[in-house]
Length: 480
Image (cartoon, rainbow, N blue to C red; front, side):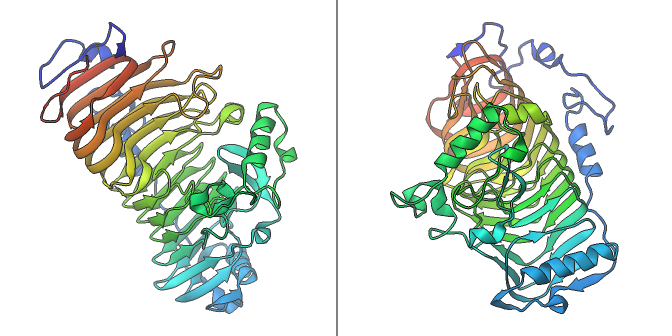
C-alpha cells in the first residue's frame, strides 16, 4: 500500500484523534440553509436537503394538444414526425401545456421540444423511434463523449428552452440493436462484423479537433461518421423534468442533460443493454435530483460528467449540487459514477437510500479519470446504501482509465465520504489508486460493512484515511 504517513485511521469502532483535523478544511454553515457547505461537520447533509427543496418540477398550463389531432396515426408504422412537431409548435405558441401521446404505437423521427411543453405519454402509449440515421439530420449542436460538435439529433432534443418535460407512464423505444446503431461501437458482441463501418475514425478526428482548438462550428459530423446520439438531451435548458417513462433500446446515453439548471428525473425505468447505454448522465449541470428510478444498463447506471479534455476546460462549467436518492441499480458498469469525462470538475454529489445489486453490476461507487481528463472531484457523500452483489469493487477510484498517466492535467480527487453502507458479497471492497505524484485526499468511511469479499482491498497513493466501524469478512478492516 502507498499511503502518506500523515494519514489518520479509525478502525473497528476505536476513535483515534484526527477526525477534526481531517474535516477542518470544511466551512460550517447554518443547519438547513440553502447555502449549507457540503462539508458542514454538524450536518453535512444540509446541502442535500436544500437541493431537494429547491429542485421542483416545472408547472404547465392546463392545455392539451393531442398528437392525433395533428395527424398522428397509432399503427406503429406511419411516420408521425410532422404530427409531433405540429403539436409541439401549437402548444408552444399557445403559451404552453401538454402534448398528449394517447394509447397506441407511434413511429417517428427526432422530437424537438420547445419551451413550456410537457410531452406526456399516456398508459399504453409507445413511441417507436426511427433507426434510419439520416432521419436525424440536419445536425444539431450536441456532445459526443463530452466533446462539442454538430451531429445527428438526439431522439428527443431541446435547445435553450425553459420548462420542458417528458412525463407519463408510457414507453420510449429507441429500437436500437445489433442491426442498427449498436454495431457502430465496433464490437462483435453488438453486431459489428469486421469490415463494417464503425465510430473510431470519426471519434479520433473529434478528439484531435478538440486538442487542436478547432471551433465547434467546424466540427460537423453526420452520415458516414457513425457517432451515435443520446436518447433524451436537453441542451442549455432550465427547469427540466423527466418522469415516469420507461426507456428501452437506446443508441447511446439515455437521459443526458447538458449545461442545464434545475433538473428533476424521477420514477423512470431504464432497461437497455447496448454499448455506452448509460442511464442518466448530467453533464455540466447544477441543481439536479435523480430519484425513485430503476436502472439496468449496458454501461454506468448514473454517470456525472463535465466535459472531456480541452473542451471541458474551455467551457469550464462544472457539475455541482446533485442528489441521487431512493434509486435501484441492477446491471451496469457502475451504480453511481463520476467521470470519466469530468474535465470541468464535479462537486457536491449526494447519494442516499439507494439499493444496488446484480452479478452484472461491476462497481457500486465508481470514480474514473486520468491525467488527460484532469478536472476535480470534491465533496462526494453517500449514506444508507444497501448493496447485494457487485462483481468487482464496491468503491473504485481509477486514475488509470484509458490514457492513464500519459498527460499533463493531474486530476484532483478529495473528500469521499461514505456512511451506513452494507454489502453482502463483492469481488473487492476497495480499489483506490492515485498517482505517486498526485495523491487522492480524504477517504472517510463510517459504519460500513463490506460483507464477504474475494480479494483484499487495493489502496495506493491515498492521503488522510479515516475509518470508523468498517468491517470486511466479519472483522475490522485494516489497511497495511
